[in-house]
Length: 295
Ligand code: ADP
Image 1 (cartoon, rainbow, N blue to C red):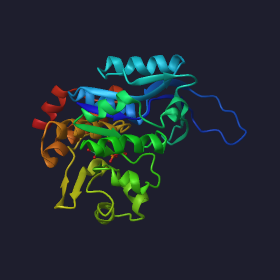
Image 2 (image 1 turned 135 degrees about the horizontal axis):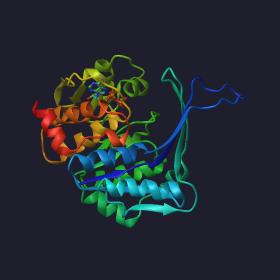
Image 3 (image 1 turned 45 degrees about the vertical axis):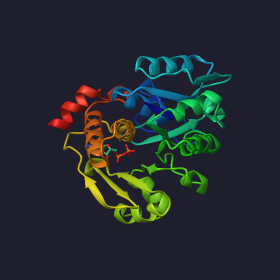
Image 4 (image 1 turned 180 degrees about the vertical axis):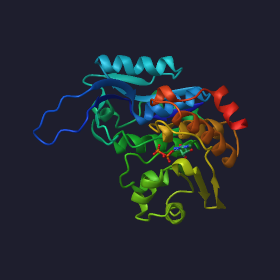
């Protein structure tokens, strides 16, 4: 079983030829609402990968909240600990231009209320094989989860996104840190991931850096770094590739697979997701991942 303490957001995406300048109005071409948030995306990835998943967090008492909960429910994620709170759900306001560039405003909404654990949350974390954390909740909330996991010997897997300085007490409670290349560079000030990983190992015992099409690299304080290649595929949409990878990785590790095997399986899951458009809707199911991993 996997527990996720994290965000749910409704992504409100406007497609425009050119993004508006300050004070300007432009007419868009298309609009979509897409359920997301890194927490929810990782929860759905883990559920489709075949684990029982509990989502801890909050949605607002608005229409978005109803839809965000329904999306998780339909993906088989247990939402009993996803609270509905007074006020708006988290939203991400995204403008995508014809060059594929984007500008994003995130309003945390209900996510901003998750500053501490409730009693049942702690029980869910205690009984899990792993706790997945990201940084789209208040730092106090993230730390409370990590601390509960550490006290009960549950492996924490932290995705440091959106990237920001990590408080020492959070690092102390983190088992496995999974940044992408950009996040690894931002956290360390070192551009080369092979060098950044050494700096990160001074702060946490295990690190996986995802390297996009180049795969992923694992290093720990106890073993030499290893790189696992990604399957070569034609990517059409890499949205949520990292979340797919982390969700699948957690499931494989939770089943007791060794790190390199777990990374290869997670790479198969992420490779499938980048070949399809969409965020959580592009995430593969276990049987597909098994087939891709065997290919
Ligand atoms: P993020 O999505 O957080 O930016 P990455 O770009 O590093 O993170 O992608 C995460 C993982 O998704 C990679 O480690 C890899 O396994 C997979 N992936 C991403 N892009 C591709 C690609 N073009 N081809 C194959 N796999 C990919």
